Image (cartoon, rainbow, N blue to C red; front, side, top):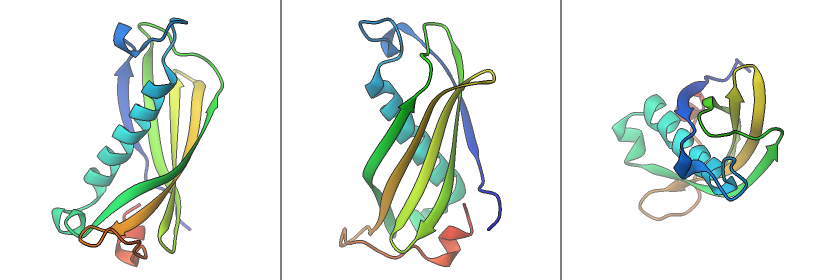
Length: 129
C-alpha cells in the first residue's frame, strides 16, 4: 500500500477555543477533526463523487498528550489509513511545532447519498487517498 495523502491546515488558538481550564476544549478538537476530514474529502474528490456518497462517523478515539493554549499556532494533519468494505479509518494529529498534542483515529462508514444505506468504498475513491 502506498503512503497516504496528507492534508494539512493551520489554526491559531483563540479565546473561543478555550474551556474553564484555559486550554483547548475537548469539543473543539472534535470540531477540528470534523472540519479537516470534510476539507480533505472535498480537496481529493469531484462534485460527481460527492453527489453519490457521504460519510457518517461510527466512532472517534482521541488521545490527549499535551494541552494547546491561547495563542498557540497549531498544525492539524489528516490522512486515511485504510478503506475496507464500507469503512474508512481516518487519522488526525494536532501539532504545536514538533510536539504532538493530540492524536485521533475515527472510523467512518460510506453511505449512498440517496438511500443513506452503507455502500462499499469503490477502488476509484480508495486510490484518491
